[in-house]
Length: 245
Image 1 (cartoon, rainbow, N blue to C red):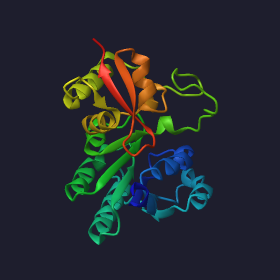
Image 2: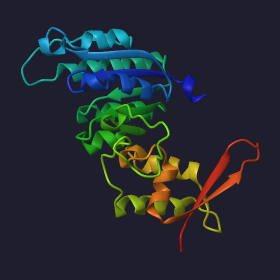
Image 3: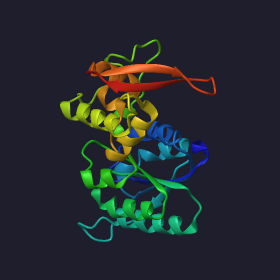
C-alpha cells in the first residue's frame, strides 16, 4: 500500500518557513510513512531558535551544519551527502525534498534514476528545473489549514484558497491528456487522466486553483462531460470524462 512506503524527509531549514511544517508533514503522510525526518541548518543562528518547539512536536531531527565560508551553502551539501547515504542504505522507498532551491535538481534526478520516487515541496518561487525533476511537486502556499466543513468545493471561496487561475493553458493540458488516453467514444477514466497530467506537469494540483479535487475543477471549466459509472467491485463510482463537442 502507498501509505506503507517508507519515506525519507529532508528539509532545507534555510529556506522553508517554520509556519508550514505541521501542514507539510500531514501532507507527506498521504504518500507514505516518513521514517526518516531531518532538517538542516546552522542552529547556532538566533533566527532558527523558533524551530525548537516545532521540531519536537513533529519528531524531526535537527542536523547541525556550520556555514564554513561566506557565499557557500553548506546546508545544501550536507543534505545531498545524507540523501546519497540514505539512498545506498536501501532503507526507504522514496524521498521528500523540502526546499525552494534549484540546487537539489540533480539530486532528485539521481534518486529517480534508481527507481525511487521523489516528492518536492517548496514555495511558488521554486525554479522550474527542480520542479520537473520530481515525480510530484507541492506548493507550500496551498497547505494552510482550511475549514471546508459543509463547504461546496465546486466554487473557489476565501476558505478554499486559490493561488492561481485556470488559464487556457491548463484547459489545453487537460484536453490533450484526455485525448491521449480516451477510448473510441472519447471517454477517459479520470484516475488515468490525473495520473498522466501529474507525469506531464509535476506541480499540477487542483488546490492551486481553489478546488480540493480534480473533478470539481474540471466541472468548473464547462468544457467536459462527466459520467459516473458503477465499478466492477461495486464500491465507489468510477468517473469518466469526455471533451464536449
